[in-house]
Amino acid sequence: MEEFKIDAFDHSQGIGVIRISGSLDLSNIGALEATIEGFFRRGMVRLVIDLEKTSFIASSGFSSLLFSLDTAKELGGDIIFARATPAVREIFEILGLGMIAVFAHNVPSGVVQLRE
Image (cartoon, rainbow, N blue to C red; front, side, top):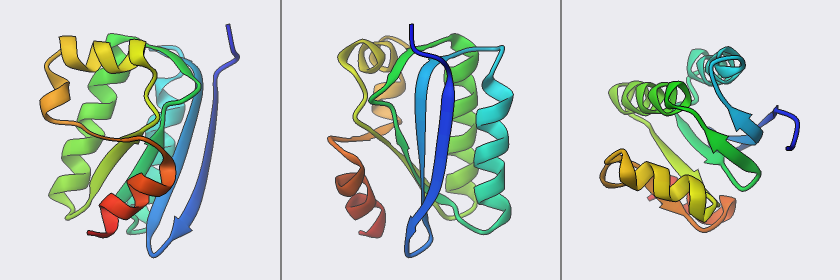
């Protein structure tokens, strides 16, 4: 199993990118929340979350992602989920989040979606 890691950077035009590697669960959700909140505090409310290397998301992780998505929308932004693996995407669907979350094939297409 891959070690949990978060990489975050400013992409362009006020869009942030967060890459999550490994399993997202209660033991490390605080790091993701702090990263997202850091973007929000800087006025960056349009984010792409890259899930390509995310092996598992626990219910606490989905709850946090949904809360962050709601917050982004309240602030006039949005969150796009990029490169979700079939297993992670299936969990989004099972939880009924597939109708709420927006997905992109890759980070650049997620950025384009946020610019529209």
